[in-house]
Amino acid sequence: MYYAIFESPIGPILLAGDEEGLKYVNFMKGKKKIEVPDSWVENEEFFREASRQLEAYFAGELKSFDVKLAPEGTEFQKSVWNALKEIPYGETRTYGEIAKNIGNPKASRAVGLANNRNPIAIIVPCHRVIGANGKLTGYASGLDIKEFLLKLEGSC
Image (cartoon, rainbow, N blue to C red; front, side, top):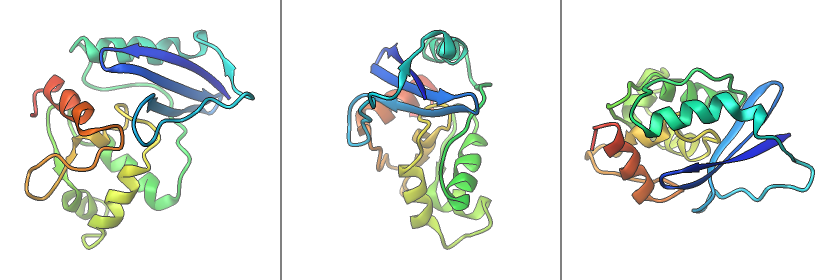
C-alpha cells in the first residue's frame, strides 16, 4: 500500500491506495485517524492526480472528482458510498433519503453506520449527509470539518 500526506486548509489528509485505486482519504485528526503502518510506502507521485484534484476542490475550482477508487467494505456499505457520490456539489441529503435511494427506506440508521465507515472522505462526500431535522450530525473527523466542507460548497 502506498501513501502520501496531503496538506489541506483544514489539516493534513492521509491518502492511501494501491494499483486498484484509492482506498483511504482520511483526516489526520478525529476518531477515524489512521496510523500509517510500517509496511506502507510513502509515494507522493502515486497520488499526484488525487492531490491535484483535492487542491482544485479546496480552491473552489472542482465540483466532481475523477480518480479511481477502491474502498473496502460490505456490499451494503458500497451501495451507500455509491449513493453518496451521486449527491451533487452544494447539496445535502438526509440519511433517510439515502436509504430510499438505495431501495431500503427503513435503513436510515444502517446508512448512518455505513456513512461513518466511509474510508474515502471528501471524494465520497459523506459530509453532505445531514440529519432529518436539517442539522449537521455525526462526522467522525469533527463537525467543524463537516461545516467547513459544506460552507466551501455553499450548502451551509
